[in-house]
Length: 353
Image (tube, rainbow, N blue to C red; front, top):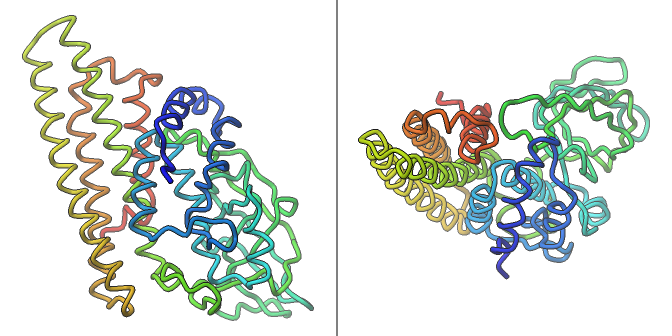
């Protein structure tokens, strides 16, 4: 099944400007995502998902991001929640992830506290940057655990919250990825039963797909790098459109230099993409047979950061050649440039240590 059709691409591109202005995915595009199961790329088939191999899912993330940066990011984050299926209590997983509309939004940062009480926990906290918060059917957050006396027991655990337990604060004001609705959420003394908690380091032996044994950091980094590569592709496409339009009006050496720079960066990006997917494919094949070593994990992490950095540098190299046309926020090239810079400021992609 071709999940990223020309029809979907045309729809997303046509809706992108309005979605950015409204700060959210349009109902039309959201329904198209649900219809194609794009939020369920990594959900087990018995729960109505596609359960794609990770390398195949990454190529979908890249392609979706080429359509539009915010769209690609939301597909990636929404689909990425499927990774938690292996760690959730199986009955909870089936109940919450089987519906057609099911999609997770959340944060891995332990910005909350969970106090032990009879039968579960009382959760309070505030988490930033919850992409897709407006339409999520469940939220996952990380909390520091405190015992009944309020003492920190040194552990961090993941909690599943329902939309009625969450207050979405509508505070996403970034200059890029504007349509992602990456707002903060606040939770005050919400009761979470024990069965609605999980630890991604301790998956249940129910779903056998190798994704659920794949280390989380490489999973996240490869996903974000794929988004950066897709947005950079779109930027270079739109940059050429602007430069060629300017050349038709005023032929000049400046326009030729811009096209030459764009061609160089297209080639450079293609090389980075080939290196990235070669490493992804190789390590995924290894992972089928045995756990990755620390060195192998570091190799995929490093390659992901290098791919994202190359994508960013490609855009930065070509952007000065766009002149005033590149400064207009309603230009697709400008939107892609802003989206790419926003993706690449994610803490994981920014960490070169």
